[in-house]
Length: 160
Image (cartoon, rainbow, N blue to C red):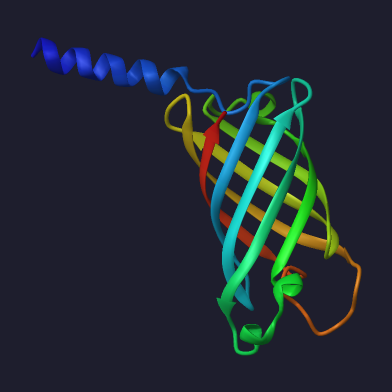
């Protein structure tokens, strides 16, 4: 019985000690699936905390496959790179210290857009995230719609 209580206490301590966004100097790495109407792919991102509620970062995605016609796209049409700015609101809305809600803006090779994301950490270093991206202004009005539409990212997040 003592071992069970010890294990539960250690787990509670490790879960309670996780914090979604710590402010200046905080670093997050995320990797996950990139889901769109015309393609699915992979997404990676990195965020660095500049202040109590502000972070900047970079995000990249690559469309692997999906709708008919994407197999003919070259690397430049499948790849996107974004600079991003986030307002980390986890401590403002105060739902749970392991939870962070972060709306933001991004400037990419394909468009200028916005995003709204959420992270939840299970331990000090590991959690899950989901993020919705949407274009506000497209640079090119050609027929390539990959990365120029509503995009959902979902995956794992890590404290660095």
